[in-house]
Length: 373
Image (spheres, rainbow, N blue to C red):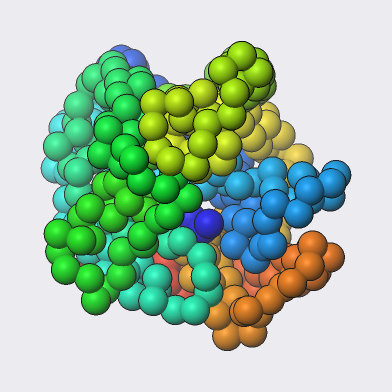
């Protein structure tokens, strides 16, 4: 199931810069591009490609490894979405209190919503996350100048309450039956699918998005903070997973029907609190590792960084490639590995070559319009 990051690139306009010490509670990043964020996006893209290519649930060691990104790479994207939103709007929170770039946010939201609904109609057999991004971009507008503590409280609240709302609305339905919104659906249907019935219900997925907005206001080049992300994220990922397995041993596996027994689940896209904690922890761990290793990654993995900068282009491109050349396959795990490897190599090569001649990807350029004044 596919996802795409927030701002889709850390554009020149959005690069972190030095801020005055008067910005208490919101230290900015030092001048220069945060390559670790680009690499984290690229790793999420690679995981997303594997999930979307399939097949899933094949079992065995290689099948388990292949399924690892399921429900994790998309959460990493959502976390980075919030980070990108805070970087985009950082100037409005500075000492001068500049205006919010609401035109840019609304422009991107409209493109993501309409484009995502249209893209869902293609025969790629994947779940498109773009409509959710479009909705969240609009919903977050009143929060762009909110205090950081409020964003943290809201994130924690939705982490706990969001899954409960999802269960209450979906109670008695098949947990594995989802309905993705498309451009031909009515507005009420689209809203219901984005909020509750799709692969990425907003009432649940808003939690990592808000957490990302909190993280985007921190000094991401602080080594201590990076280590907290790495170690704390790993502890949350493993701890929540282990606690879920313990609960399952005690009360048994939840059934297919949505009910309160599903609260113990840590299965990818189960929309449950323990899964959300585990997946968000894994996302934080990967982000921390990418930030800690930024100097090495910037020097030795330029293609990964390039892929992260062209995340929207690569995301849309891989879905179109699936629809045009791959479906209905692949029919085997070996085929899945082969197709995933081919798409990843092609994406890395394209991104690396493109960024040698242009700072902005083809679809990323569209997201920049209209330019901020």
